Length: 327
Image (cartoon, rainbow, N blue to C red; front, side):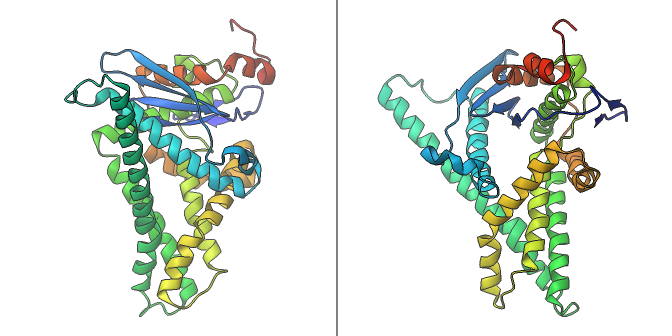
């Protein structure tokens, strides 16, 4: 069951069935991933849709079973998502770069450009990760510490830290949504969700069906980030150290544990219609009202192509919803 923007209920066979596909919005496009295969569909400046399909190799390499062990898999899946996300975002941006550089002709120049691109991507990821830790993990701790004079209890200040952390995150998301480019990114984010919700509701993947599907989804990364913040505060109730330095280090050291637990929660939420899960998912779904916007039909078309490049939705509907081709 999916609640649309108009409040209508979409019921196909009386339930939703997880397709296990996921993705993200990129610049003027959508990336979809199914197991190890991913596809990026981008609407180019000339109006045409370019689709790139490839296979992603996990950072675990030959130890791929690590991505299947509960709680541990969340850490590696999070890192893999960051790497793939940055890579596909960079690829989509390449269609909109100023054509100032000379055309690369030799293999040596191609190799050099690829190395420079990889280094820049790695540097951007490290910097972004460090800034995220500083802004969303460390800053709230110090801000809550300013209340020590009026709130002597460390336990109570932990609660304030959690509130400040979530407030900063929501304010950040709301602020960047005012930027024109980010608004379009959020529209493609909406298209990604709508495509997945459409097929998981048992509906054929058409522009009309996608348009009326929900733009919020339980497995969204926005919900994952909210779980990360909440789980992080809960864990800190059980890990107590005295010095300021150790408290900062503990918050950083707990990140893999937090990511592992949060991943299991979001995975559970994505495949369950349990009333308790529904309640726990509500805050994340509400927050997605900021990170997803209603896409236009041209954006939906891009989303559909990215899905169809990696996922046989007709076979999925036949197996789970008794779909007959031609309906």
